[in-house]
Length: 305
Image 1 (cartoon, rainbow, N blue to C red):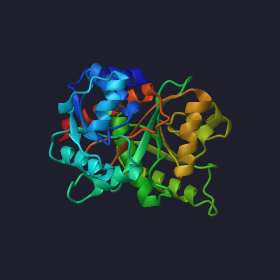
Image 2 (image 1 turned 30 degrees about the horizontal axis):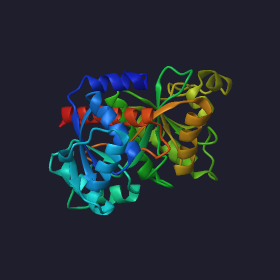
Image 3 (image 1 turned 90 degrees about the horizontal axis):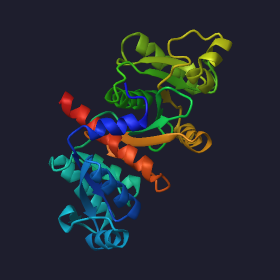
């Protein structure tokens, strides 16, 4: 099981490079990250976007972009469609968001012409390496689904489990997070958490161990779980932190990064290939880790197909 993002990067380097299609690639930070990944043997870039702007940025920044790496499409929505089509046509193995709104990328992925949707819904998973812990955390969903229903939480959970499996964690422990550890009818998320745990116990959700509702402290701290008398194989040892809504996911993700100095990677799951999606504020290191994560997941998907 991979326990650090450097281990993720090393595992990805050991694989055959993936061709990565970058949608609306006319962005210095994105080009820098993609070609840094290319220099380490992770990917072969295929850039879709405004060719003149891409080549201008590359020349000014000393990034070795060749004209043959670029598919010229100045319109961002059309560039996202073309990048998704490259994946559909097996000319690219992996998709990455460039200088375009996430909604444009998702629209292209979900377009019936591209036929790239795989699971019940697409969700974001942040893989976080937090100082002081001996494992990677998978935080869902901080970027896509605003107030997921029970059915949507089930799909989000399945997407996160697929990422954990790709990192060698064959039975990840899932904490369905809430503010409290008991079912409270005034807090619907606690009922959802209990139901997901019950479905796991009945064998309806597989490939993981689920418990909930659990608060964050007793999900990640065995000592906190003991103090509260919680006896569970998940409590204190959670790998996947299933959050109740986008606000909780976004706050937890950014708190880990900015308050604790966590390293992170992020992908969108639920399509036929992972989608590398990072914010403009994300560090170059984080973008590299995200690309490596996407490469590793792509390899595992190919193994199963």
